[in-house]
Each structure stands twice: as structure tokens, then as C-alpha cells.
Image 1 (cartoon, helix red, strand yellow):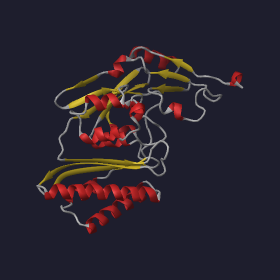
Image 2: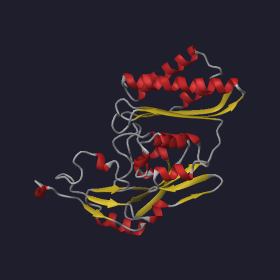
Image 3: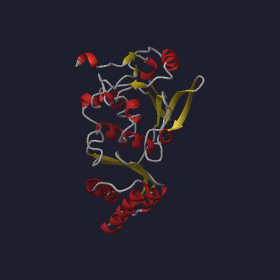
Amino acid sequence: MYAELRSPNVHEPHNLAEFTNTIISYKDNATSLWAGGTYIMSQKDFYPSKSANVEIISLQNIEELKHFQRNDRFAEFGSMVSLSKIQSVGALLLPKVLIKTIDKTATTTIRNRITIGGCLCTPSFRTPLASTLMLLDANVEVRYLKKRMHSKWLGISRIYDKNGGLALLPNALLSRIRIPIQQFDYQYFNAAGSPLREANTSVSLAAVAKMEQSSISTGKMIITIPNKGFCQSRDIDNIFSSLQFPCDEGHLSSFFSYIITYIRENLGEIDQLQEVRLKGMLSEMINELNQKSLSV
């Protein structure tokens, strides 16, 4: 039995130059970039396996991917920085909606292993972290091979297709994430279910707003449906921004109906449990905004 198993070859570059040389050397082979390994090792029979005859390139030893820097406008993390590290160094710096998103992502032990780059580049489902970073207008640096290695900064939404699937070129490396440091009067995040284990029933909602007395001057929200994609729309944002608080049940019901219709038209039908969970989150968010408006 064990004699028939074929383990992948594992390469361990120590810097980006070595990584580039490895990619060039194996550009015609099936390769897999290994960050924290939490996704790859969760896949059935991946390692070792008869079918796992690929070149694995481990990113663990590339120090350039573990750097962190900040200024007055943004914080920048290398793609190999763990979610726990971002949570600890950014607790008083980064928007609270991002810190709460990280806190809701797995357990502390697993967050010590999950890297921000690996979390954003998971191919088979959509993560709430990706949608929260879209909400915050984060940018990513992508390195990709043509005749030589190139690098380009992109808005994070551009590394996904219209259905939320990963749209990076083969062997492309997401190397840095730049997160604007912004102030908001209101920030909300909640998630239900595991996007990895319960993609068909999991859902999350993130929102930020700048407020003027009992109304929203600028509001944005995004919904993550792991098995379908990301739901973000200017029309939804405009309706959200036009709500007057306190908001009654009638306006909440109409808003929810519009969101569900938009999801069905653009992403397809979703599970009934996802609808119930989403309605509960939206109701919780509106109730918080009602309380906030009454306390002004």
C-alpha cells in the first residue's frame, strides 16, 4: 500500500529570487504554493497521495513575505503573516470590522497557522476575510510569470472573477496586502457556519458607515456566500445609505427582500438556512443602528 503512494516534491526557497527561479524551472509542471497549509492539508487524500504528483513550493522560509509596515494612510502585510499576528499588531490600528472578521475565522490555534495570503487565495470557496478587505478597498501586490517575473498592485476584487472564484494566473504569487487605515462611525461583522466545512449553509455580512445624526452619509455592505460568491452592489449601498433611523420593520423587510432578489438574480438560489441567517444578521445590524441613532 505505502509503496504505491507518490509524495509531491517540496521546494523551499529562502527569498523571492529563489522563488522566481523555482517557478521558472518548473513552469511546465503542476505546482502548488504552500503557505500555512491549512487548506491543502484539509483536502481528502492530498498528501501523500497517488494523485498528488505535483511540485509543492513552500513559502515558509521567504522572509520578505513576513514583513509588516505602516504609515498614516495604510498598513501593509506580507502574505505570509498569520491572521493571529495581524490581529495582535492591528488591534488598535486596523478597522474594527477587520479585527472582528479575523476573530470569527477559525480557532486561535488555527489562526496561528492561517496566513492572510493563503486565506485570500483559497480556490474552492469564498472567505469572509476577502469580502471585508474588499469593503475596506484593500489592494494586493501580485507577482506573476510571463517571460520574466512581473509585479502589479490591484484592487483586491480584481483577483476574483464575477462569481467570486480565484482568477489569478497559474503560479502567480500574492505577495503583499495594503489595507487603508480609515475611520468609521459604525462597523458591523457577523458570520454563521464554517465556509470550509459548511459552504452550502454558511453566510457572513460586513458593513461600514459614516453617519450624520440619525442618517447614514456613506454606507457600504458586502455579503459572503461561500458556495456562490460575493454580493456587493452600488444599488444595495445606496439603499443602505438612504435608510433613516430609527428604521421600522417595514423598511427592514423591504431592504431584505431587495437583497435576496439581487442575490437570486446574480448568484442563483441559496439555501433557506442562509436566508434565515442573513435576515438575522441584517436585523441585528439595523437594531444596532437604531440604538446608535437614539443615543445621539
